Length: 271
Image 1: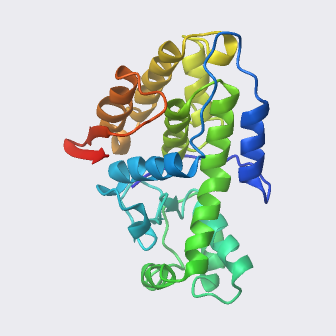
Image 2: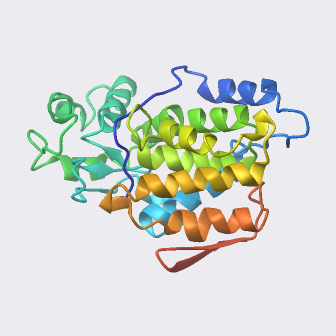
């Protein structure tokens, strides 16, 4: 499953999706640059979720992952849910807080003090032995599912798409940003999403700056590969090399099906 380092900047607004769309409509690409398309179009967003799930869960069925939870031994404690929320990287804590705001007294609410205590570590103190089983039980609750999707969008999807649109990127570039922020989180460390973007911009201009979109995206994917190789758990870069780079080489900037790719050597397709 995924994992981010230090988390996380977020677009804090109840109407985050509306704000993202507004930003996309008002961001003016530089003259001659492509008009940014929308990963937030429902059909394209579904594709994005399936692409991420192929890399994280070896399945296109991302909705089957609400109940996923395990400690994968990457130093981030428990990893769970549709986006790999982690007990050691703050986003799992924020998720359970959101769930509890929506449904006080839910089965996970009792773990909030423990999640606060283990935040920033890989400890299970106060979580074992019941947390994983209770997470799986909560996964059948539509309110918990809605909370997962809300936090995914608030913390990862909406900020990534908004930034990509600001940079003049079409749907593929928006997905590249989203996949990067999902894995690496955002912050000041060298492998965060913002640092990856800054590294790319040292080598190429964004379309909004008048640069060529393909050239910039290649620079971004190069920077992403570098960041992934800094950590053993992410050292397999096939989600870039045989997925995103394939679409880029095909010139499929709008992520239009049919899409065919490999992750970890396994083939996938969306028709």
